[in-house]
Image (tube, rainbow, N blue to C red):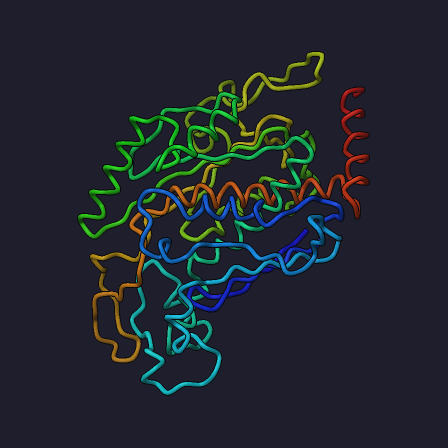
Length: 385
C-alpha cells in the first residue's frame, strides 16, 4: 500500500489517495470520521478546532460500502477556507491582498523551506508544513485500522508524559481498558491524578504564553510473528515505523519497548526470554516492544514518540525579517499551546498504517478473501512449527 496527501492548512480541502487496498473490505465514512473526531479533541487545543468539523468524503474506490480494489480517494473540506480564499486562492492577486509573510518562526519549516524553494513569501511553506496535514494521515490510519481489525489486530494509544509529568502506567495487555480510560480523559492519560497534573501544566503554559510537549505511546495487539524482515535495512519494520513516527509534525524521537532506558541496564534485564506453551512460542517479557531483528515477535507492539513543544508561541521568540534583515519578534499564527493528546491519536494511526502495510506485504492479495486464506495458512504453519 501507499498513500499521497495534498492540501494546505487554509486551502479549500485536504486530499488523500490510498492505493493498494484489497477489494471487498467494508469501509464507511464513519470509520474514518470517528478517528478524525478523536484527533480534534484533547486538552490544550486552540480555536481552529472549534471552526473545523472534519468529515471524510469518500469520492472513489468504495462502492456500496465496500472497496473495489481501485485507489480510494478521500476529501476533507477546510471550513476556514472561506476566510482565506483571497489569500490562498490559485489565481494571481496584487501584493496588498497577498499579505506576504517575511518573518520566519523559530522551530518551523519557514526559513529552511523558503531558502530551499526560493519563496520570498513564506506562507508558501508554512501552509503545507502545518500539522493540519496530519488530518489526512489519520484518515489513512483509520483505513489501516479497519483492515487490521478484520484479522484481530487492534490499535490504541495514550499520553505517557506531558510537560515533565509522567504517567506511571505500564501496558498490562488489556487494550480495551486502555482505550476506554484514555477516551474519557481530556489528556488521553491512564491515571486520573496524573491527568489532572498534566492539565495544570497546560494551563500554566497557556497563562505564560508558552507551550508544552510530551511523549505518546501506541500499542498494537494481535500482531503475528514475522512482519518485516531482517534481510535488508529498508525491510526492517521497526526502522520503517521509526521513520513514520518521526515524520509526524514536531516529533523528534522514537523508542520501542523500554527504549532508551535499555542503555542503563545489563543484557540480562533487557532481552526477552523465549517460552513455549500450547499456543506456541512467546516471550516472558516485552522489553523490546514486540520487535527482534526488524521483525515482529508476536508480542504487542509498543512504540513511543517524543513531541517537542509547539513552536508557535504567544510569547514569541526573536527572528529576522528576510527582506529587511532586521530583528523582530516572530509572527504568531493561530495555534494550540499543547497538542500532545491529539498527537497521541496521530501516532497510533501512523503506526497502524505501517503495521497494515507490512501485513499486506506478508499476506497480500487483490481481495480480502484471498488475504484471509494466506493468513490462515500462515497461522497453521506457526502452530505446527
